[in-house]
Image 1 (cartoon, rainbow, N blue to C red):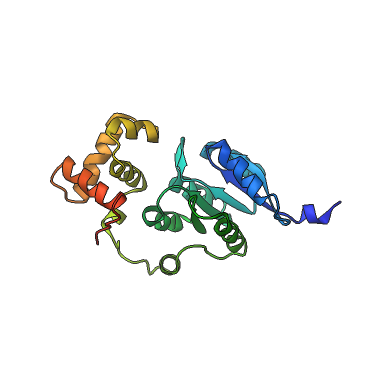
Image 2: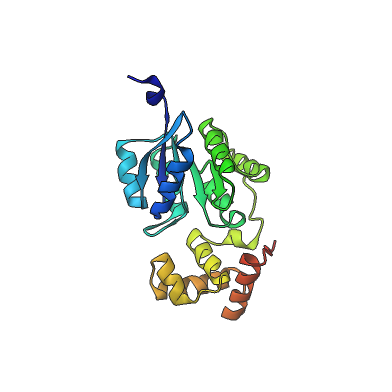
Amino acid sequence: MNNNIKDKKSIMVIDDHPIIHDGLKTLLASEPDIEITISAMSSHEAHEKIAHQQPDIVIADLSLGDSDGTHMIQNLISTYPALKILVYTMSEEKLYAERTAMAGASGYVMKTRPPTELRKAIRTVLRGELFFSSDLQRKVRQANIGLSEKPTSIIDLLSNREMDVFNLLGQGMDASAIASKLNISRNTVDTHRINIKNKLSLPSGKALERLAYEVIVLGKIEE
């Protein structure tokens, strides 16, 4: 038996876009010691496959049709505490990285970053280290020893699904478009809007939309 093949680190990719699976296989084909061996298009499929074949590292998107990505990470880590998960996504790092870290992810890379950064992140996480900004790594360590800080910005008050709705509101989507994007009902979107407005003490839906635009598009995250 070829020991080089036997000793390769196994990677699982969770993403609902086939082009990402193909692109990552091409990107990592030249790496001698790591290999994508498992692919899943949904959270449900990922759970089924991991139950039979646990990979050394999971590369996961946050935008999956059947699940909130952060919730999926929480469930996977709850079931498999030693599992290493690297988030690879288009979702803004400033909005989601801390949430995924607190859910149990070991790293976060945006799909807009160069391939070299993804390779570095994979190897960093495989070594058992974190791949986040230094400030975020500090927060994660504090949380792990019971010293987690109070919310540092208004968006920290929102649940993961509320954050998804807030993000899409900021991008200019109406309730129907958000419902379609998140695979939820229009009524559920309306309920989330009301809850977000109340949590952030905003006087109206227009004020919510304006704040979402300022945070998501202009990058003004209020303390």
